[in-house]
Every structure is written in C-alpha cells, then in structure tokens.
View (tube, rainbow, N blue to C red):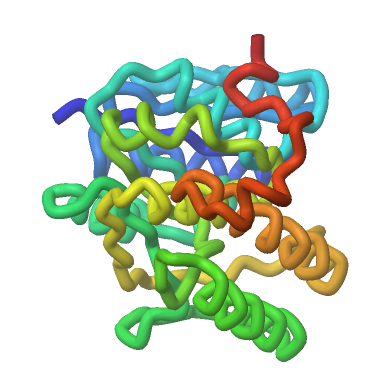
Length: 253
C-alpha cells in the first residue's frame, strides 16, 4: 500500500519540524511526504527546502488558508492508496502515527485519540484547555453519529476510496475540518476506528482556547446540519439554505 503524509504548517518551529520529518520518513517510508506551508517567511522556506529527504515536497501558500484547507490541498495533490496527516509540532510521534495508519486494515478512516482511556498524554495541559476540550468532545458525541472520545486530535488517516467519498462534502477551512471529516464519514456510513496514542503536549501554542472553542462549537452545529442533510433528513433539508457554500476542493481551482 502506498502512503502519502501531509503536514499542515503555519509559522512552525523549523528545528522541531525538521526532526519530525526525518522521523516520519524513517518510520513510515511514505511515497509522498508533503508540507503545506502557509504564509511563511523566506528563511523558513529556505530551511525546509534544504532538507534532504527523497519523498519530501514543500508547497508554499502566500496566505494563511487554515488547517483544513491546507490538508485538503495536500490530499488533492497526492495519489496514494492511503493518506494521513499530523500536526507540524510533532505531538504525535512517528510511531504513534504508524499505529493510526495501521488501523486502516480494518477501517476506512482512523482517528488518533488523546482522550481514549488507553491513551497517554505526556506534558502539561492547562486546566482551561483540558476542561474546554473535554466539554467540546462530550457535546460532539451528543450531536454526531460518529461517537468518539476525541474528534480534534491532529493525527488521522484514511483510504483513498474514503477520501473520494468525503472530499466533495468538506467546507471548513480551519480547525473544525477534523470534526467535519468525521461527521461526513459517519453520515456516509464509512467505518471509523479510534486509535489510542501517546500524545506529547507541546508548549507555546498561539491558539486562544476560549475563542477557538466558541468558534468550533458554532462549526459543530453547522457540521451536524450538513451531515443530517447527507442522510436525507427531511427536517434538515427543509431548513437548509439554497446558497450552499463552496466545497474546499472547488475553492482551490
């Protein structure tokens, strides 16, 4: 099975990302290892472009597209049997990502999980981040057909066939993309497997936990509505707007 891995990156720690890319290449031996780099400075582009890995390619966007849009662009550019992505900070080790990818032997989509009872979180998360994250996960379980412990973990993999089924139904360009991917997959009846991982919490996040959680909660209700429309819910079709948004794959063209 050929494998393509996408790393979305916005102002990454270059040294950490360089080390992570080497780890991924050694552990996974992907056919394609693609960094989707948003709004970088020239020094970052030069540093990443100088990394000597045969499978590595750096795609640069002059603007900040958002995590979901970046991953979508990467997946659309890769033609492999299996696709995976992981966060650029290396919170998911190469070995942990390998376990997520291996779960595709019995699933269409595999989702790494930090909140699974068998998972291990290394490092310290602030109380605010932990409470907001746990509360959001509980809300998502109530609203979506795919019942998981963790919807937002930055380590997921899917088969090329699964991507072909979900790609035209993805609209969220930012962090809510993960949730939309799983909601759409559940609505389409795809097999989703949650994989416990070792997660190393990285300090220095620039994401505002409260503002991001509020934004994600809004996106969650929108995503639920879209998923229900895919299932031909009469109620959700009745309240649906005629001016549907443009799918991410169309925005790239």
